[in-house]
Image 1 (cartoon, rainbow, N blue to C red):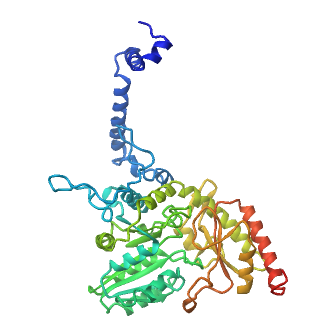
Image 2 (cartoon, rainbow, N blue to C red):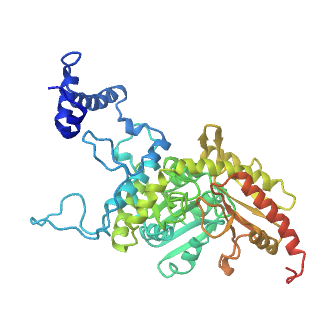
Image 3 (cartoon, rainbow, N blue to C red):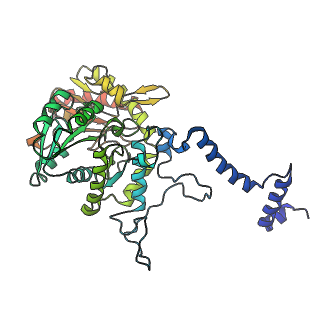
Length: 481
């Protein structure tokens, strides 16, 4: 029987069987197409394993990993969603046997499938450069309802009394938390120059008799002065000193919010834990509130923290919602592209501002004049088709007075006046006026810039005109306009 087009439309399944039979017998006695596909799937894994003793999954580039964030491993069966589902259930039915099984699905506070996908994706990215990786070398990661919830949970996971050595220049929310909510809970802190290893060594020595936990808290680049801490040097120092007193657990923690995993991987530089406000670059669209902590699977302190953080996450309950986790997974898929463009634009804007006659100083690690420029080149480079960039996506600059700074912010039109950072839109903020007056650390004339995805020339023209307008605005009487 010869199949016509009309019969093919009427009997599609029979037509498919005829085509498969014809193709399987044509040209020899090889397997049918479906069998050939299954054979090739299995053979690919076998040949690849023989060549490298590693699954291909562990050797692909960071950008490819990011592009596939949240997608399960390639499977023979197929039919898997290429965008992960959002699991909104808060509770799961208990089997008649009374045993829930090993997947942990009992109540969403303790485990949620969407949150688990995000935590596994971040844990893999933080260790992406490890050779011969296995499941045991993926960092245990824990997603929380905000960056500050992640900070608080990490501190709660430590043995009391807790002493934090924090940088002089740091996101003001951390010292505010330490000065207010945590002061009555056995948590103390001291500000340290985190760019000076001798000072850090001295401060660790001074606190080795206190017992409990001593946390060396790095934030790099720092907010808002863009200071860069040499993570590896500080972590080596902590590692050398942590056995001086067995009653004190010395921990190294890095807030790497301004340098996401495609730029810096602090766990591979020796840190016990790394923290991100996923609200910023990981989410990347100003529509997520989330924080995440990853712990080193290679260090005893990291695994100790991971066990305790899991307990805090479950009992304290400040977990990230399924929707926030899904949005962050979606953001990860374009992280490398956003970072490359934002770094390139930030470098050009820093050059422009650094040479402007009415800008006193521009703080940007990519500038040769930056005091930690060499550390930035070594620690936070992004490799692109046009070479490597090391400055990051954030910068700040200072003008002569607070009034001038507020006038510049008031005069921009493309750049938006808002707090936070890491989105597709460029944001400008006068930091001193948003910090607690009693703990204000930012210079009064400083403006912080979170560089977005706009055309660089548009942003440069906006800033250039804003600086010109601001000069006129501060030289006129209050009501002239």
